Length: 577
Image 1 (cartoon, rainbow, N blue to C red):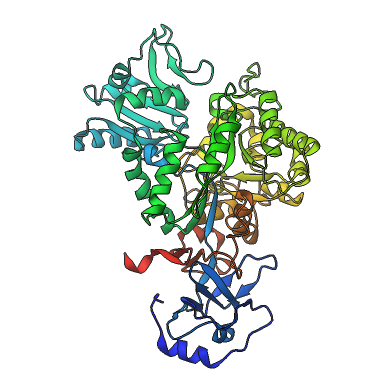
Image 2: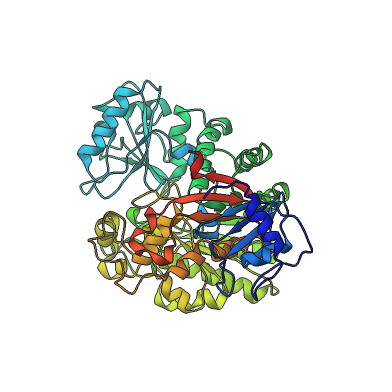
């Protein structure tokens, strides 16, 4: 199968103008650019229609149906692509990603390993083979450090003359050596950046240990080591955009730009669009984690300034809590290992509710980082209040993460129309959940994590969002990997571990596919444009090497993406590699 003109096929198809019942074609005798035939085209429309052919003119789908009906829409200039029975899906939509900040985090050596000896071996190799002024890396996991977080002293033994800066796997912590602390002017007398939220871990004498908590303090150090400019970040972002296209991704919901101003981040993406180098639709958010700032003016300004075909500022992103590893996620019941800890929300509950109500009144949807079940409940309460006091409208408020949802709140997603968004690749009993999360919360709560099917049973909408480049255990952006884990509730390479939540916790394949296509698009508010393959929608699609309905779900992540198309433009071609 190749994307090339097939004259004989074109001529044969022109002879016939018959269509079948479900064929969609409202146009009269156009000549399309592309016609894809002989496929298993899963449209993800409301009837889950499977078609044989699809025609594209410009950036729009103009026909879906039987190949025989293509005679009405193609001409001699149409490229006819024989799919040879391959599976076609709408382009994948990622409901939660940090595409812009990935150009800052995902630099240097990959440190995703559970083995400390392997970890230090990778660090030594990077130090010995790189002459960079700053040694960078990413993906330091939490679960190997059962006896305390890693320290600067450990890195000093490997490199003491050049600064080292390693991002933790969740993006909300960093590990640095003493040279990095020195260059940033961080010592025992340095006040914490945001006391109680973002700070420098210290020893008994008050000296920084080399472990840094949360982004404000992290950037205080990193910005002293490198000049974090849009130009610096653009190189890394450009590389990862190509990888997203290769994974079949055609649209993303970016949940927060950091490392540069939000305006600079959006402008970087707008520049990619103008240069013809943006292979996906970038729907972004104004990021809010400071309750002393009114988020509405900034959100309005971004929405007015960035509203092009591919780059749009649409949402207000709220940070409600942190994560269980640092005891700063918000739970209804106490932490199992430290029941006396009562963390405060990043932004006070009443301030969050006021912002949600005011944003909703202006037609602005919010998306909120709610890791624990108390954070989930508080955001649901805020949306409930917004619905009570504001006029009816088409709301698309979204809760992201929702690692734990209290049973009393699961049905509220459907009742309030709140989208539940979470990361498929996290939905297994990985080593982090087996160790840190189980210690923090106990086995019963861990087994109840990611109650996707419960929310779906209450008529809620679920959306897959990778949260790339951050994670709890493995940084994963590939939709097929998320779909596999969401179905099997096991992690590739760890299939001997029982499924998280038991054998009935997983989604069906149909549910999982919708969650990475039409339902993710719904959560962003672009389902009228993309997410399903229907006449009048944008020509965003992906061609796979296997039909996912015909293989073992445990093999889904191994299926190849053959082609990705966004807006009628081929953004990835596996045969060109």
